[in-house]
Amino acid sequence: MVNVEDLISLVLRTGVLSGVVITSIGFFTSSEVAWLGVLVLILTPFMRVIMAGLYFLSRKDTVYAALAAYVIMILVIGSFLHII
Amino acid sequence: MVVHRSRKPVEKEMVGLDPSLVALAILMFGIFAGSLGAMLGLGGGVLMIIFLLLALNIPAHQAVALSLIAVIASSSMAGSVYIKDRMTNLRLAMVLEAFTVSGAVAGAFLALSLPVSAIQALLGCVLFYTSVTMFRERKEECFESSGSGFLQGEFYDERACATVKYEVKNLKLGAVASLIAGAVSGIVGIGGGVIKVPIMNIVMKIPIKAAAATSNFMVGVTAAASAVIYFQSGLVDLHLAAPTILGIMVGAYIGTRLLAKSKSVVLRRLLAVVLAFFGMILLLKAGGLLAW
Image (tube, rainbow over all chains, first blue to last red; front, side, top):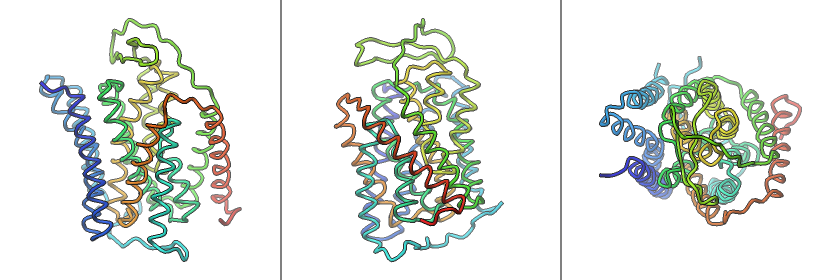
């Protein structure tokens, strides 16, 4: 059984390092690759929110699962608002 | 509200500077800011935004966007260590980050329609405030607590060789502070720890180490919430993103190694004076009294 803390730690580290590597490759190749790298970096903290949300959901801890869902909802709204 | 729909290419307004020279400068400064930030418990964002705005003359919204990217990288990296060491209060973070994230989205939207002078003025005030908090001694008080009740937490204090238990008080005030910290973060491109940590420590009665770790943990998602708006508006300079992220991360790594339990009061005070100086510069610029 993996601890939620260790899982979050892993998600954060993997996400940031992938973001750095992809963005750096993009620096020498194309801005499309750099764009992808920045996107990976920005989405990393949200991945850990999803992880924590799923963990609390599996423990029937609905208050914290709802809080995670709210944060994700705000992100989605934020990313669409610029189109209006 | 002004909404930037087009993904317009980032304008280069840096006077006569070679783009690769700018990238190199950002990389070098990022290493400096990252290591100093890690040593003094100051997020790299504060130093990064000053450098981008005043040294490189990058347009305000783009500077804020790049600084937010740096903040996400450094806070996520540090956050992964703190939570592995069980310093972070995950439940408390999840409650408060609902507020920081709401503030961040509102702040980023507000910032896009704000004039540059308003952003400079707010950043100037934040720098003064940061300077004041750095002059204060960082005491590590004892919080006697049974460690029971809502949102209680505990962590192992390496220096004291003991498990510290604490209860969280005044959650409402903490929520308000988080909302404000999030909005400021979205407008000026800093993490906002400087606003949250003193409130969490003094008002919410959370031991400083747990407060710092928990605040840092929230900073990543807070900066990401506003960064996504700048990113979608085409304000993240993709050429400068790599040196920004790489620099701050290498710096944070070095800073953590150099930390070695150093409590450099002189360094803190020196930086406090530097921040106050740039705070004044920004306020003068905002008032149109200084053309830098």
